[in-house]
Amino acid sequence: MKRELRRIGSMASALVLAVGMAASPLGMTSAQAAGGLTITGNVVGAAGNLGGITVSGCTTDWSFCSDTFLTDDSGNFAMAGLQSGSYILDFEAGPSYQWGWYVGPGLTQDFGSATPVSAGSVLTDVQLEAAFSISGKVTGAAGGLANLQVQACSANPACGTSAVDAAGNYSVTGLTPGTYVLYIAVPPPGIGPVGLDPHSPYGSGYYDGSGVTPKPAKALPITVSDSDVTVPVFDVPVGAVLRGAVTGSGGNLGGLFVELCFLGDGGCYDTTTDDNGSFYVSGLWAGKYRLEIDDFNQTYVSGYYTPSGLVWNDYSWTPIQVGARDVTLPTLGLETASTIQGTVTGDAGALGGVMVEACSTTDRCAQTQADDTGNFTVTGLAQGLYTINFDDWYYNYATGYYSDSGVAVPTVGQATQVAVPPSVTGLTVALTSRTPAFAPTLRPM
Image 1 (spheres, helix red, strand yellow):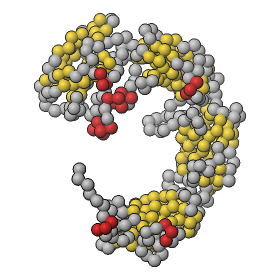
Image 2 (cartoon, rainbow, N blue to C red):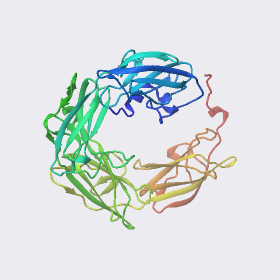
Image 3 (cartoon, helix red, strand yellow):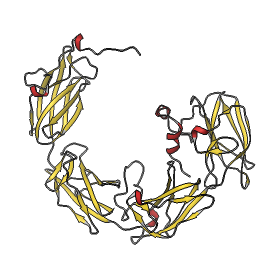
Image 4 (cartoon, helix red, strand yellow):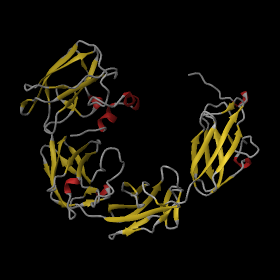
């Protein structure tokens, strides 16, 4: 069963994760160094000696991780090139046997219960238990079933994944005894995009005993104990489609980021506008959604959908109601964004690295950082009045607000508001050095 990152989270703290997550099955980088010690042994299962089982391990202090080794046809393995110390051993068994960490003589899926093994040890008859599967078949009126994916997730949490073939068959293998729920989805194309596939005709959701529901609370628990489980055939529903288009002062706006989120129990669908400024999201369940449009180039003002245009505040957007029929939104016209440019100085001249935040009277804020010459540009601003705050994270200068006097003032009530549009250039502000009375008190460690 594919464990992906779930085992990493159970076996190490965030500090350990920062060490590296690359080569080895434990999620750690292989920090090979010269070492002459070996851990040997053999692996057995219900069918006898087990060949092709992967074995690897890390020292209990995480200072060293081994390469990955395979058992031979007789089930024997030899983890060579080890440094001295005690190791947590990881056995990857494929779909027929359960994975786990060595606990002697068998395996455990609880990392904290694993038995450390000293370099140089010989292990006899490491016992692997049989794994099980959840299998079945799905149907769908829109075809294209091979694009679907079925996940079986337990409360650990641990998930196994199976692709669906063109006939709708799936089989999630390598499962340990436990209670699982099935999640049916179309994963986003490629590697990296967040969310669900925005162009699948099918609604992603949980198996509820007769079909698919978007509500996890209605998922049917499936118990795996000592045998494989076969789920009755069920249908994956075709969802509704939401369409829209985006324009601006430059005409149709392509390449904008679009995110549609199902309120309550659902996930989010991410897509982009095409060259004509159009977008669509399909496979939608009936319910309410939040729509966000973002111009990452900040040429236009980003925000959340309302019938009269985009708003920045995420508490004033308008939910979009989707039912059984498709929805087409009116064309959205985006406001051209404005900028505020200026320079930050101090006693020693230009101040680089100062954080600059411009906030409007409607609580819309945008941030940037002054460059090495003290210059800054705050972008993506909607029409309105802004106060500008300056914060020196090195703590050499007092936090202050822009004032047309040219010197930062200490309170927002004394600040000079800046109106956009049009874009503003040439602002200058001098920050005040902190006096010893304002210096932070350093406490002994």
